[in-house]
Structures are given as structure tokens and as C-alpha cells.
Image 1: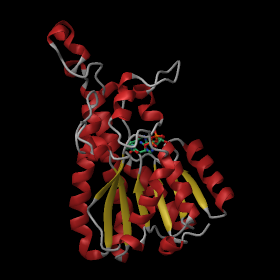
Image 2 (image 1 turned 135 degrees about the vertical axis):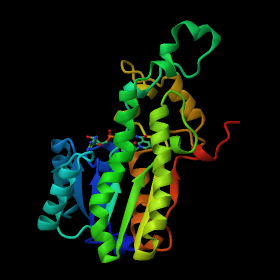
Image 3 (image 1 turned 90 degrees about the horizontal axis):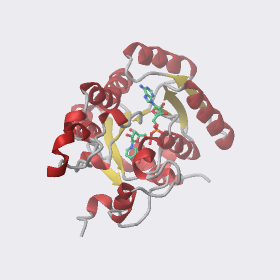
Length: 283
Ligand code: NAD
């Protein structure tokens, strides 16, 4: 099916970092359905190549998969050259690589009087290494690809950047302080960069997915053995007015909208795609 509303993105080139992951894969398929040539970058090269090959055979639109570490500038520079040689100029960038780590996750939601003897189960048990890992992946992993890929866009005075935020950016979730703060930094950086690039034709926006069942949160919201919702999973569903987890494909309309000329006058915003989670006060 041809998406006429998004015809401005047809045959354009979009780089997706973390494109081998659950949401990245869905975005790549959504973009290919509108005729976008996708370049899937992932540290997991098998995943990147698999997504690219499935996308090209399912949609008949070219897709490329390359190994890249978003935390390594040399790796990004190398892949930029490869893309310019083998694919063409980059029109759009989705900074999708990101995620949380168990090393930056507390067991306790809150410290209570009863827990004073084992404070290491809360904030005091967190290691700097875990914090740094999560900050690096989410913030530096957005900053570095933007430094490497956006320069050509600015020089050509045309391009679109889409960052991936989270519900945690608005109000932190318990247990995951590093991920929450790192995603808050994405919203702030999105606004800063949008202003910085506003006069040279490069737009910068973000999406904030609500709760989607994927690799990075599965261990927190479902029981490994039974697959049943954990108490935390139940809380999430109770706080999502639509009453369900999102399906990765639910992001695609918003992604296409923010990348296409349909949102020509929009820069510096973050759109929640969350089944109403961010609108709900919990009562
Ligand atoms: P995912 O773990 O399925 O995908 C992340 C991908 O990033 C993986 O393929 C991984 O190999 C890749 N990656 C990790 N480190 C990398 C590196 N250094 N260089 C290059 N690639 C690297 O996660 P996902 O759920 O698809 O999440 C995608 C984005 O959406 C992340 O930014 C995440 O924080 C955000 N997000 C997810 C949810 C959710 O419910 N799943 C909600 C809000 C935001």
C-alpha cells in the first residue's frame, strides 16, 4: 500500500541506529512501506543484516545492514563513508539505540523503615559503572551519531533527526534512575539541537514510546518462567488508560509524520505514543 500522505519520504535515505532491535525493526518496516531506503546500524551485525534483508525482500525497497557501535566515533565515521559510497546522501537519522541495564536498576522501589538494614537493595547499591553505561548508551549514543551524520545535512540545509525518548523523561519510574535521567536528557538535547539547526533546514524531534514489551523491559514487567505480568507490569497496565502494552507498529505513523514534510513546521517537540499513560494522573 502506498502512503500518499508521506510521499515526500519516498526514495529518501534513513539511517536507524539500534535498527536491529525490536522497535528499530518495526520502524524500518514502517519506513520501507512508505518507500524509504533504510540503513540499519547495530552493534549486533547479524541482527542488522537480517532486518535489512527481510525489509528489502518484504517491501521491494533497498535496505542495508552495517555493524556500528554508536559509542565509537571511528566506527560511525567509517560507516558514514560506506553509506555515502554504497547508498547515497543521508536524509534522515533515527537515534534508536538505547536501553536500560540491570546494573543500574534497584531491587526496591522505595526505602522504608523495614529496609534500613539492607540499603544496598536501593539507591546505595547502585554502581557508578551501571549509571555510566546507561548514560553512555542513551545520551552519548545519540550525541555521537548526530555529530557524525548531521554535518552533511546541515551543509545541504536539509534533513530530519528523530530521537527516541521514553515516558521516564517526563516522570522517572521507580527502580531505574539512570535510564530516567538519561532519557530526560534526550528531551532537553532535542530542544537544544532543534533551536541550533532551525535556520538551516534541519528539524530535530523525538518520540516518547509508552510501554512496549521488548527485550529491555521484559525482565521487569513479565515473569521469566510463566510470562504472567509482574506486579510492576500490572501497575503499568493499570496506568495506561488504553489498558494494553503498545505494539511496536503503533509507533510508525508518528515516526513517518515527524520524518516527512507533513511536519514541516515542527521542530523541537517530543510526541508521546503511550496509550494515554502520560495524560493520566493515576486516579
Ligand atoms: P532493543 O534492545 O530491542 O534494541 C536496541 C538495539 O540497540 C539492539 O539491537 C542493540 O543491539 C542495539 N545497540 C545496543 N548498544 C549499541 C551500540 N553501542 N551501538 C549500536 N547499537 C547498539 O530495544 P527497543 O525496545 O527496541 O528500544 C529501542 C529504543 O526505544 C531505545 O532507545 C529504548 O530506550 C527506547 N524505548 C523503548 C521502550 C520499550 O517499551 N521497549 C519504551 C520507551 C523507549
